[in-house]
Picture 1: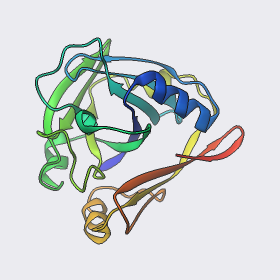
Picture 2: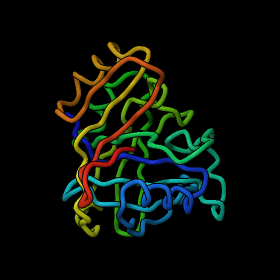
Picture 3: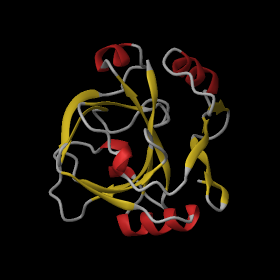
Length: 202
């Protein structure tokens, strides 16, 4: 029902997040854009023809959206870090019905000629302390094929949570991806990539 679409690195300021990500992965990010409905902006990095990485932050030049921002950015503090992952679906209603309570309310969004629907939690925070994936349904072109391919690929995504068994069960009904693993621990998310210069982690 779901498949991995992209991973999101949150940061307090976009230039800081871009610098940290480029240093960690060893390749430059591509331009992104602004999200007027959320008061955020981003930069992007290809992970292949159908996946990408996003560095996202509150846009200080944009007006406040009048609602909590996605990825819990209103409460973000500290160094840039991998904060969320996003899964695509063909049927947003069915995906939400099969997801834990609080997975979000569908919003229609746009940036340039990109159109998509995304489930945004009322308080900005996804279930399981933000570790349940955000849900997206693209309504036209996908951004990944437009990005320069720097040779990066996501090879592993590891979720840690005190309720690891419950999170694993919630995901098992929705997504099967051999790169995904769930284990016990303080809430956190980490990823492994292959790059032109070898394996790198975030």
